[in-house]
Length: 520
Image 1 (cartoon, rainbow, N blue to C red):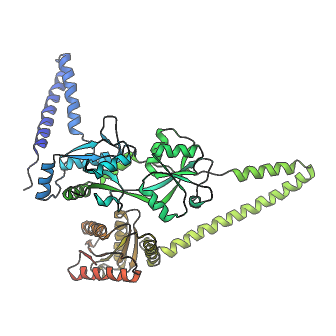
Image 2 (image 1 turned 180 degrees about the vertical axis):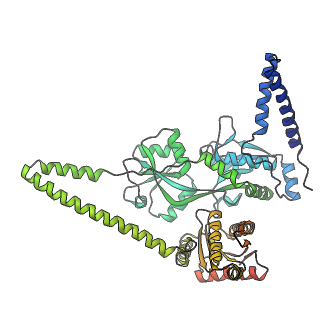
Image 3 (image 1 turned 120 degrees about the vertical axis):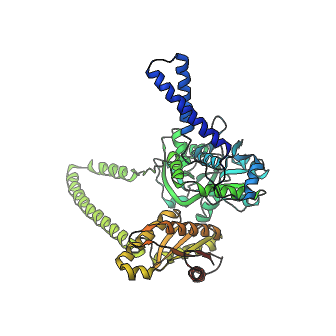
C-alpha cells in the first residue's frame, strides 16, 4: 500500500466535488429561470473556483518522490524554503511585481513546491552580487538558477544541470559578426560583471577584450552607442531584453560554442536539502519540462549582410562610366563577361562546398546508424584531452554494449539486427544533452562523450539510458538490454588509458549479469 495522501489533497478533492455538484444545480435553475440575481453571482463565483481547482499550473500532480525517512523529517522540520532569485535574468529567472518567483525557473519551482508540499518564499535581492552575499550568509536555502564554480562550492551544493543555454552575441545591424571578431583588433564585448561566462570566454578566447556591465540593458546600450562591438549573454535573456526594451537597431547575430549549464544550488550546511531537490528535479515529467521551455524560450538569430563592398563597386563603376560613352560600352561588355564568369565560378564553388559537406559527413558518420563513427569519436576524445590540459576541465565517457546481440542476428537475421542498431542510436541521441557526443564505437558498441561532466554525472546518465532501453519494445525482438562501463578522465592521461578503463568497467558489467552500469 502507498503512503496516505496529505490532508490538503483530500480537502481539495472534496471541495472540487462539492463545487461541481453545486454548479450542476445552478445550471438547471438558470435554464428554468428560477434563480435570483444574487444567486447567479454566487454560481459564477463557484464556477471560477471549480476552474481554479481543476486546472493547476502544468498538469503534473503531487509526485510520490522516493524520499528517505530522514529527508521527510527534515522537510517537516524545515517548514518553508527560502529561495534566492536573480531579479534581472528574465525570461529564465526573475521576480514579478507581487514579489513572486517568475520566469522559467519560477515555473520549475512551482512544480517542485507541489511535489514536496512545501512553501517556497522568495528572499529579496537587488542584484546578483546581493544574491550571492545572501547565499554566503545563509539568508536563503536555495539559489534557483546558477552555474557551478569552485569558489561557489565552498558554500553551496550543486544539482545536475536541468537546463543548458548557449551564449549569444548581439551586434548592430550594420556590423557583421564572425567568431574571428572575438579577438579582432579594436573589438571589445560587454558581459555582466561576475558572470561565469567570463571564465569560459577567456579560456576559449585568451585575447578577447571584455567590458563588464551591471545588467543586460546596460550592455545592449553600450552596443548601440558604439562603445563596444557586441554584447555576450544567455540567448533567451538577451532576446527578452531586446523585445522588452524595443531595441530594434540590435539583433542576435551569432552564437558561441559555450553554454550556461544551469542547475539548482542549495546551502552546503544542510546536505539533505540538496538530495531532496535533486530527487525532485529528476522526478519532473519530461513533458512538463518541455512545456515550460516552450512557454519561455523563442530565439531568432538574424543574419546580417554587409553591403559596403557593393556600394563601393557601384560608386567606382559610376565614376568610370562617366568618363566616356565609348568606355561605357566596352566596360558593359566586359562586365557582362565578368558577371557570367563569376556566376559560373559561384555555381562551381557552391557545388564544391556541397560536395565537401557530403564528403565530410561521410567521413565522420556511421552509414547505418547516422551517428558519429570511430574516426570522429577519436578526434572528439583527443580534443577533450587537449582542452583538459589547457584549462583543467573535466569530462567522462560511457561505453555501452547491446546484450546478446549475436543471438538477435542469428535468430532474426542481420536485417532485423541492423534495424535494432538504428533504434538504439536514436534512443541515445534523444536522451543525451546537446553538448554530449554519441557515436558507434564498433559492432554493437556505442560510446558517449560527456564534456564538463564528472563521474557521478556520467553514471546518472548511464542509469537513465539503461532504464530507457530496458523499457523499449523493439520490433520483432521485443525487450533488449545493454551493459554500461563508465569512467571519467584523469588529468594528464592519454585516450588509450581512458578507454581501457571504461572497457574494463563494461566487461565487469557483462560478467555481473548484464543490463547494469559499472564505474571504472
